[in-house]
Length: 429
Image (cartoon, rainbow, N blue to C red; front, side, top):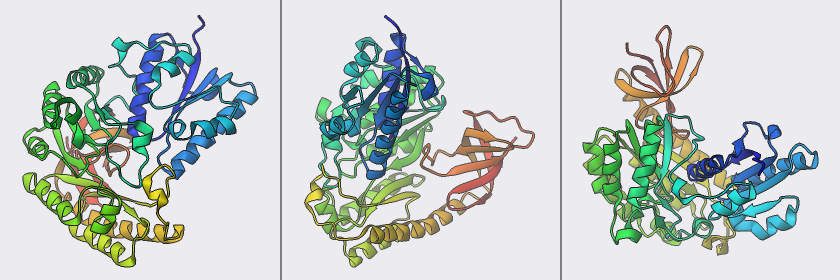
């Protein structure tokens, strides 16, 4: 059988990235060649995102561009997979008949068959990395059991399903052997890991065993505030290779809005959780995300959210305007604010957070920190501390000079200047 050349465009979040990497490893085992340029391929395969409006638009734009290449005879086939297909398969089929096949989030064998490859269960642990070789993601669970009113992920990804610990350890061991130094533990909700396997949390057990493999850094992303096992914070404090960092999306602080969001937590419980985490590990840095302009959010409730940002002093924070998602429960609510009003509220929160971040960064001036280098441009090296996740958090920009510095290596750096989003310094020789 002829082995096809495929251009894979992986859009969306890190969880999608892992899906694409798994697909590539399986396909390559069947002799498929992946090209770096779309024009060099026979097939374009797009792994779409369907989570927010901008991401959906990007997925559609890229699909239309691929269809144009097919019409021009540059490529022969176009396949579309992933989250957008899971939500809108029938509409997409109708609107884009030129696409040769649409596949959802749970159809890996079918995608492989379409591009001329076969799925092999024994290769499930293997991935061809799309990230730089020194860091990677480990997806510990699929799907979500939460029913947050603003979110369609449970429809897209299905019920929560933890990956068995032994399988994750095999996968992590392969990543370590390939040169990965920073392992980012991800799921839609890491807090719930293990409940479906053992009727109790297994997150701490997993983290301890991952730590024993010997990664330089292990980072935890996307903890849900309900059922988060606080013993993980103790382990984080005790184990040197587990980053003092937790991404815990809270979305809001007002109890009425949290109830409408179906978050399962109120304001007082949220504050107590933050306090407990910081008491157990004073060196921890917390990242969160918030939604401004949720249906019915009053000016007073927004000001309460502002005050929460001011007093909670998160180390990293992202804020997004609410948008209606037709497959989410909140779609039934009246969208009470204009897009402009929502964006103004987001801007106000981010302006306040910038002041907090500036103060938080200033603490590093005059200190020496461990930095992992991601990129080198001229005489500047761009890296991150343990308090910064790839792609979303702050940069540590180091003047290299005559010092030999390599991407993917760790260096000690003296910090001389800071701002809200950057640390500046030089490598300590």
